[in-house]
Length: 120
Image (cartoon, rainbow, N blue to C red; front, side, top):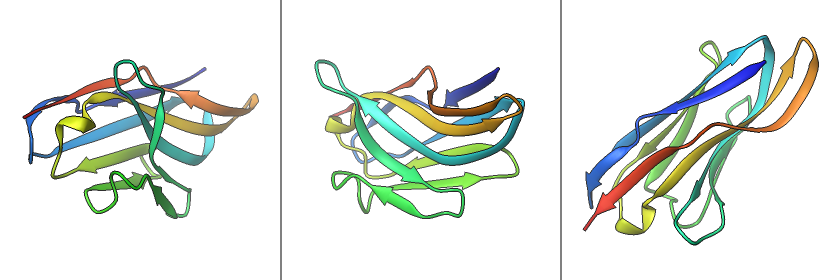
């Protein structure tokens, strides 16, 4: 059994910042790729940013230069620092990861999501 628990969401004014965290727990041997996705009301879930185990990052064009993804492998945690937030960043943000556990690989595992609301 593994778990991804997101935290750090909330309400912020446009131009403000938030830092999301996602902690993985369970009988994990290693975590490969981790990432953040978001889903706004009435829209499909979309990629925000991903990071490999060795720190190679990838960002959606809409967040480049404003968001930074990072991870702490010793804590099985991935972070998303969000600066210069815009109302269009309002969404539920989901954490995603691929795990190797004692029972084998678990791919494309999702957290429960955390709400980010940016007011204008």
